[in-house]
Image (cartoon, rainbow, N blue to C red; front, top):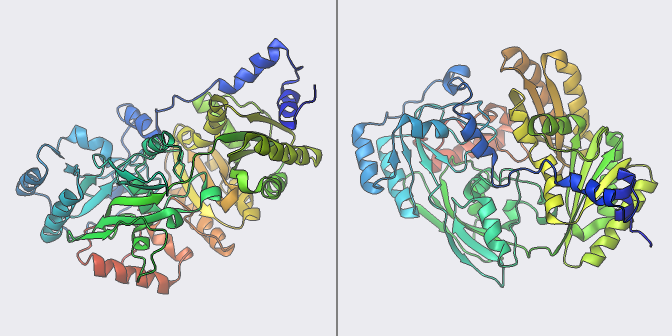
Length: 531
């Protein structure tokens, strides 16, 4: 019996013969440690709320001064009740979850949470807030990693959680129109039943809202295959700070009439308005999916594997991720996931997706043969069924969740030339020494995106001073960006100049002033105030 490279790779790791009962038992290892799918990071955070100490108030920790916004009154609350009866919340217990980010690093003090269902309700709420000078923090799934989705002081929280309806889907063009509060995973399930898939995939897909994804211009795991949201979003609807509804909600792939206004709101982080609905182009769901997890001795070999991926997998390559050994240690230690390839310095996760399984397998075999014969890969395993695929992906997708169990996390989301990705991790590790519990690096090879994470028992100014501005200066020096996909939020606002010129920031400030002259939309976030 002639074996494929995939079969040889799996059996070479387990050291077992074809047809043996032990082989199939061993292959089941890939199913152990499988996450409880549907238990998202946000749900886990909610569970821990009652178990962990609240973080300090953001305003106190970062010594922020409150801007002269109006404080919410009983009359304001009664007015909101008239607009959305039964969907205004003031109980401290209801608000606690919304006032703290899921990483438990920032905490606001909002006294009011409103949950509109329609664009018209959002419009009425913002119009009133603008007239009264009440600041507003839009909130979707509250999965921001930079403090962008929770208030800094007592801003009114406007949640899109009830704006979760699919408006239409064209099964010929693949254009999906939906409200901004739809959960990414729910949209993917809806599309999957119709033979399509979302062009975006994130570890937080079970919690994040598609409107928040647009507002932060989220990148995710398959940007390599489907491109960024700036290319896949066809149109959107947004409510401006004064309550004006901006209707750019078309589903045309070509529309060259004037300025492309939707691009202003993609990546704006809720600072110039609230996205309420969108149209997005969705690709066909692949019928053939394979995932390979490969072990490498050093980062140079990781880069060689990535080069081989592009050369040999071409159009079927849908993801190429890397993790260091510390990343793997985190998910093993804190989440009890099983690593099928222990004792490797680095790991590369490669996904292929296509429409013809035999063709994809042949291409994957050619790639694996070249990677093994060249000595770039020391061990590996391949999954072709959904359960094992999910188990392998969990090792990558749940790193952020595992880090939250390791202590306070200093998170950096950076883009730079791909050959420089791990150099920064090594230099950071040497710089902080024993003052940190761990320094780990993982990310998206396909788009040069590094997730650098440093954990410590607690937040300390000394460790923060060792990291900043060092990380930002290093990134800027190597022609990178200080925010690849998470946005700037509250935590990185003042560091924007490491990636943008003062002239560019000045134009952003002018746009903010024009669209939000009273500054009520998500204040203290994204764009620094004008000098």
